[in-house]
Length: 230
Image 1 (spheres, rainbow, N blue to C red):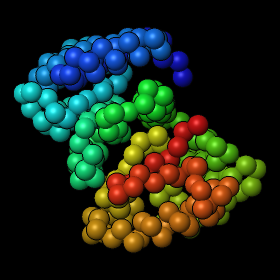
Image 2: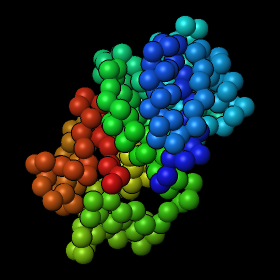
Image 3: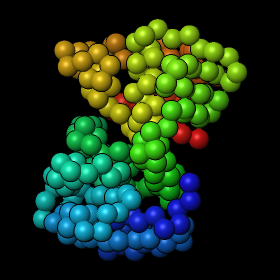
Image 4: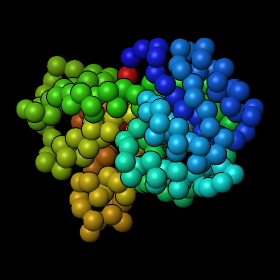
């Protein structure tokens, strides 16, 4: 996916961060919009329909998590949080509210650009309602419910397939333990993290080249899991 013409709204009140992001994104062919407050960010998001939003949580007029709440009430635009808040609880809350990803400051330009590309690819796949997902040798045909690792058909249990399907639907996005448990096992099991660890382990043994060093289903420590888009 090309970045050319993609509009990224940066909502951050730190001038040096804004300058750094503007320079980095412009150099990689993104069109950059800027806002230094939550209110301005919400206004520009509504008026100018960016393809992606980069959001700081520590804004001068409101908490960034409130910005996510407002955005998610009427928009599914990808949101990547950049914040100095490194506590797992902060990450989990932002992701549970609907953020697509979370990077802690300081961050590397390469990693940020990779997260942007993944979020935009996920959005394109979702809006295009792709029937076949491929990444790293994994192929998932969501219509025929066929899963392949390379050319070999992988046989999954119903719950393993349900878990993989949810990860595919949100490929490239961090999903929290709670989000996955809710989607696969229902609200009665949102605290049963053991279920999740067991089934993620089973999936990895079936679809990963080296389950001990997973490259497809990666762990976000203390937060959740991400299905990698290559």
